[in-house]
Length: 428
Image 1 (tube, rainbow, N blue to C red):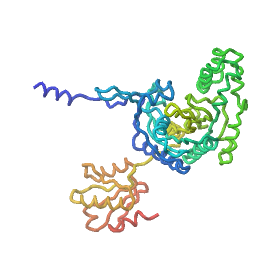
Image 2 (cartoon, helix red, strand yellow):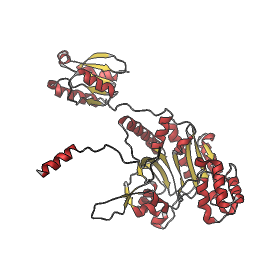
Image 3 (cartoon, rainbow, N blue to C red):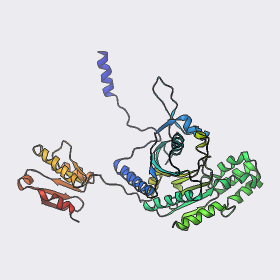
């Protein structure tokens, strides 16, 4: 009796259909828009000769934090079975796994140009527009130390955004080597460089006045004044940045799409040279949507050797949010282009044959699989799903050896000879 009562409790228990904080669903229309964006990015990456690769979602925790101790604060750990001690965590980016992969496969020819698209996870506190799971689309060139590789990454960024129809953007560039000279130029101890960079990096959040106040508090007025002078546009320009700007112009990137920004820092300490962030000028508050830089030291913890590398990451979800806010996100209709109505059980095999025939013609076709045989119910389903065509085949159509095709966009309805379906869909 007790077992029966327990079973009844289980049956009546309700589970809230809620996601964990910081996660979200993508319904079909939005997922379709995301997949179209990714396909455009993928095609652009491959035009430049980047090759696809994939790495696991889970890495050893030691691997993930080996390159940067700060990573401990953001990783999400993975619990194994109750019998084992887990040393695994979800990847927080796609770059550290790339470094691990290359260290484990030294025979791969260099330069190595790869792209990877996948989800990453960060254990940060969820905020508006900031999630614990998001998608990145990365491009990297490993084994090329010159400015040519840096310039090509910038060219891929510009061409990808152009291909996506994003016109108003600017790629802000800076040089970490130049930033490393700040202590000697501003007169403060080298060990306090990161304190200075962290304050400078807050400019978008607290403004120039807020940065000035924090610098004065940390370094004193004289050093703060020198730091501000160094950060102004045109101050301390590096030869590398000047050369990269010239090469970008030669590649056809519009002059107003590249801007040297001394206050742009990039948070991760593994950057060693060029750094860059891409901002949409119509909606700068959304933040950077395609960022990266040179990271020549990242593979050292795995191999003991320095291998030059430069790369960029497209924040797919952030770009989607920006495009939606700007009213430029193309919400995708249903993948089905035609719905074969399922009006009579006696014609079931013919419905399957009709659906197959249409698919063989290259038309995405769905057969209505619901239990309701009413014409109005199935038509309402097609309208709600935004399926352009419905194919009607009942007993009357069978007698006349025709099908009725209704275009739900134009409201046109036409009888077509059963063997002429291909001609109907082939017409302009």
